Image (cartoon, rainbow over all chains, first blue to last red; front, side, top):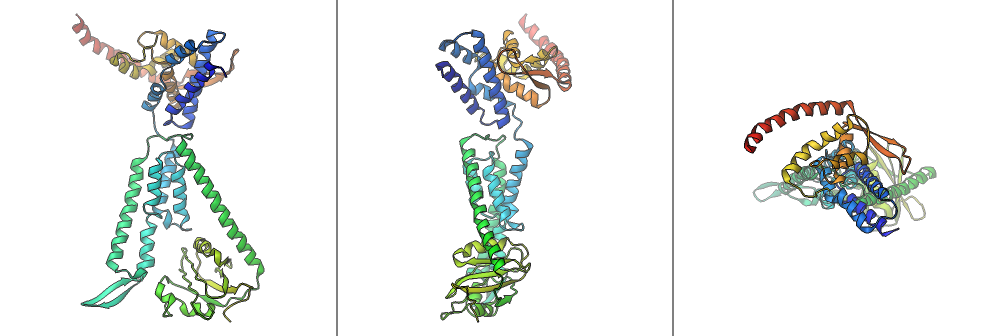
Length: 351
Length: 115
């Protein structure tokens, strides 16, 4: 490329950078028109334009910043689609965690937030990390941690202690209120920090965060499809025997499940969890769409299968127990779960 | 030539009126962007850095005051031609009436001061 060609190209990319705040279509249109204009001027010179001639033409076209200022003054903001996207992002971040398929709603909000070109990276980080799960966090913390609270005899009367972490109820209320306010405040902050117009597709930070969103989404899909394959495999093997079947109500009581039995299915867990130490199989199942399963490996147990009421098998190796926790949470309306435990050779345990 | 920084009052006035000058230019015939910019720059007082006209044209197009059409060119790539729309004509008509009133009003004071 000639020196003059390079000068023009450099100038156009400066214009493009200056128009960062404009949407991609408008930027393309304006830069395209200016490029045509410059070429037209050059062609009128005829022959090879000198450097001075090129500079004079570019001077007449104007400083990139001046051009961008004209655009900025006339800006009418984001497109309706972008508006909708950003509104959806804030809404999902706030209440998405409360929707069915927890926590997919919130995750979708995070994806939209990072996809958007209306926030800076700093605001995106804040939006994601300040109160993850949005309002769902305080609400679930309350339901699961303090849905039942136990009266404990204390000096000067009865004191209420939340099941979760043995926390005094007052402290838990404080934390829940704080988290709720923080979640609402964050949503307000994100609305306030919305840029009047998007940064555009080619800004480096937007491009980076979009690539991140795609990569993480692809990773997540890959992860879940592995689980899905496992599930299908489990369905075909068929002949496994159900050794225990329970209905659980909110039984996230750590101690109950571990120790004294009764309240939340420890006795049933004993049926499954064999082994000399009887460390027991901790099964925490919540009888609602947001079912949570978590298991601790009793001696000799290599994998556990869950069968949902719809006849669906959820099978997991214990190395994947976290994965299963997540997956079980994604099966809506899991009213009854049967647990089968196997050892490494595929023998049913618990008999 | 085009002064990059000129009298600020002229630049302010031009800011509000340039788009109507563009519409007025397009009233008779559709124009190629380059020719349009050149026509504007030929009139003293309306000359502005040429590149700044294009964002303005893009906005007029989005507001549907002008429409554009690609036309083949005998020399070089296809050209984007600008044409005033009925909405653009109405906007221009409204502006012309206001402009006359405004100009007369300013004259009342300015002419006296100039004497």
